[in-house]
Image (cartoon, rainbow, N blue to C red; front, side, top):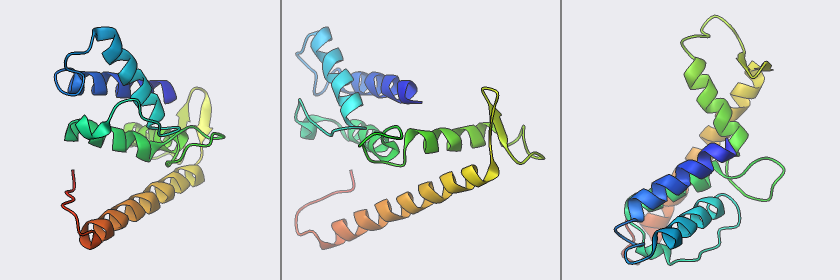
Length: 147
């Protein structure tokens, strides 16, 4: 899951910012900025380039990566890559596995209680995120926009 999200982030940031924030940079500078931004969105939150120069689409992609967060046993935030993976596996196996109670993947079984916990974490994190965004947008006196 970590590798998939990392590669997705790199490709998305590189594609979306190639003619925008990375304009005028060499291909290897753009690649390394994309690599760093993809990795740091789910770990330390450091910046090597001013993110206000990024397009709204890139900021949404980076926000999604931050929401998913890091892998278990790390210090990063988010709902965790394992929770995200369980949610994706549930959606993929939903029609194929309608009569069964667990998901099987890589010769392992993910029990229903773990799937329910993943949905609970995702739901609570989503509610908290959106309520917080609404409160900030409603109370800040600056010209904040959603994107």
